[in-house]
Image (tube, rainbow, N blue to C red):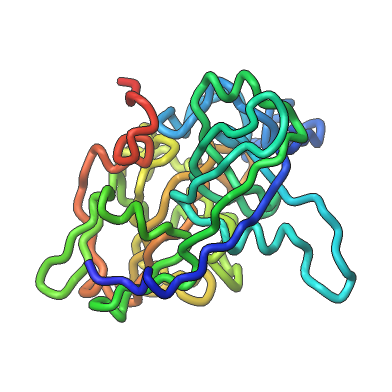
Length: 295
């Protein structure tokens, strides 16, 4: 597959492992006050490849959550903007400080609102990490284009993992393997954002009939999913016939309008240029060999 990867710039970006954030009670979509773990920190028992639904949690982020906490000049964007725009799924991450210094991991997604970049590390590394440890990322992929597929916009993706992904070319179209298909009607938080080069887009799972119809109860973190009738080229909009494909980056949620989050990787205004096929193994943990997938 021809890309412009030889023209992309690789930059160093950095974030610190954040402390878990708590807001007290979260009011669920059906009016129940709940106190649950949420975003941030080091999540020891939830990684890419694990279920994205069913946890006693809200917006839980797998692995390690990082954010750049530095403050720069008031006339410049915050450094955390650079981390979130430039880091791409598949980028190499390295622990820069602490007992796990030198350990390697991989970027698995971005979570909007809280503006975290999510990084997977092996369990033995997680045990050595501490909140406040710094993680460096070789940011590579922003500006990526597929030279033979001008109608497909690609974002948030390290081109070096493309050969390992369930992606192929067929009769002028790009065909991406996905685990699930999601109708636009289920999409919630993130709709209307002015860019998809950061953040995510939530799949609402509160309508049991639609969840059953599309088989969404077994979504996993790291799954590639196709979102129908949505275009993400310049933000997120509903558009008949368009398609966007992304990766599930955080767990389901109890709050109205929220659910498992999807960071966009591919989008096109036409299903002729970008197509999907069902591939049960289309999960980041599997095609990057990050772990043995649980049954």
